[in-house]
Length: 235
Image (cartoon, rainbow, N blue to C red):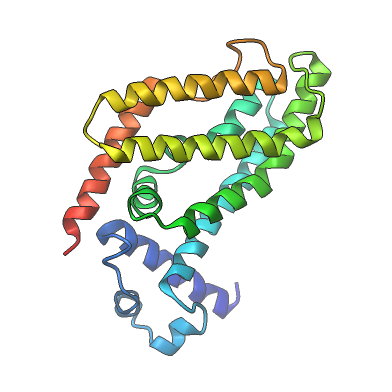
């Protein structure tokens, strides 16, 4: 590894740790410099702003995970519908992200309304996963478990829909974090989404299982606890 790549990685690792520990808003560039004993010139040689650091942390996480997923999909012996489920779950903040990172993104993208990070996540996800979704659907058509008239274009459409549903779920939950009735609204939305996916790719009713409601409730509680911790640490 080149010296420049090593230093860049150290900045990313340190910033990610600080973002998790004390929150993105509360972490300054100076905090990162102090932790690394790095000069401002050393930082700005690689990044022009704190947001650029966060964006690269996100890209590093997502591209690494999507590549591992691609290799797993190629070698897996599971059916096409199972592969499709696994791919579409990546759009869900609560299915795909680790608890601290999900809390960080939830606060930034849906509480603080940072559209740039949210849209960047959407773009990376769709660009990298659409070919894999198309491949799963073609496999399903070949096996007779799916029927789609436009199989080479449906992957992007399904992922666009998945991202929109994830945004709506996060907005619903953030509107009243402690109201249990919000989860009922979310489950109804996800059931509608699941049936829509089945219709779009011609899968049998009930064969697509994009979420686990019980798991989602547990994950939501863990994320909100982490979110509240981050907010309490802010001045």
